[in-house]
Amino acid sequence: MKLSTVKELLNAKVISGKEHLGRDVFSACGSDMMSDVLAYVKDQAVLLTGLVNSQVIRTAEMMDMVCVVMVRSKWPTEEMIDIAERADIVLMTTEYRMYEACGQLYSGGLIGEAVRRE
Amino acid sequence: MSEPLVFQFDVDGNDFTSAGRASVQVKKLLRELGLPADVIRRVSIAMYEGEINMVIHANGGVAEVRVDERDITIILTDRGPGIPDVNLAMQEGYSTATRSIQSLGFGAGMGLPNMKRYTDEMRIDTEVGVGTTITMVIHLPQPQ
Image (cartoon, rainbow over all chains, first blue to last red; front, side, top):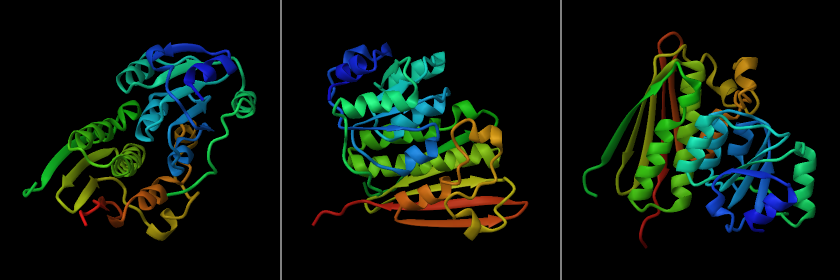
């Protein structure tokens, strides 16, 4: 699924990284606990979260994720936007709550591979 | 690459927001060395978890990364409180982090297990009241 489709399905507003909306993604994960995100390795993932701090973007960067979606209309800090821009991570915000946002992407076809631990 | 490359970073213990900066730099340096993406990811995640731990528990410290032909070695040294029971600390879900740290997305008792999961060797040298040194080794794929 292209990130532009992620944006459409979530009716999201893109805050940074508009130029990367043509990228393909194959899986996503939703969590407010960054250590849980770090425990599972997937490729080309999207991170959905309701957490607002710089470590959200760093976690995505460490995991080679290409997109962070903030749910419940959360808005990132300036530092988060800055880190995302430097790491070429697309940052968007959606009005959907976590459960609904994940459901939209899953039913839209972003199913991804089964969870695997390295 | 006959001599090992050594990178050293100070980890600021007073600023949770800046935690992870050293890991970001290491990731960049390893990319410039042309190492495989999965190796870089494992090193970055292990070091990042370690860095977060140093900020949460130990008021910062020093991170050193050595790269030679066979391995990448990460050495994290702090002068924090030490770990009284290493076996307990290694259990997934066990954490001494405060609720305020958990509200920041960490402190779920996954840090040390994640560090072990992503590295080939991990050693914890710790003394209560003195500090902790964690040494992690990731083997580089060798040409056949």
